[in-house]
Image (cartoon, rainbow, N blue to C red; front, side):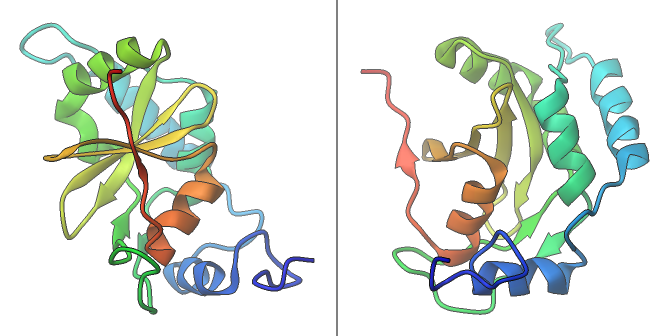
Length: 164
């Protein structure tokens, strides 16, 4: 077992603590709320005619982590850890932006929440990869929600997405 992992969870100890304090537990799954968000996002069309993509990876992330307000308790490794609110409606009015990123990455992108201090939008693609979008650009947080939450809560610097 990795020394930073507790024997009862898939997350490093500081991430596990922050998640459990926010109300997460292994096996948490609120599919009813996830379906409400899916219906709300599907029903929304921007003034320019853009619509949200909804797919299984997003719905599963919403079901397990949706509604959580996550506040890190320790210092960041490279950057300040992020305070998070996992609610995809933070991205309700970002359908065009998410669609543009999805086209650039040859995938579909759906919102999953926000960094509450910076208002950076968190998003997930069809393969479960997670990104953050802010006023400085688009960033890759990891290959799945676990890696992304770990990076955000521990203050691990994300990789900037480039067009090169």
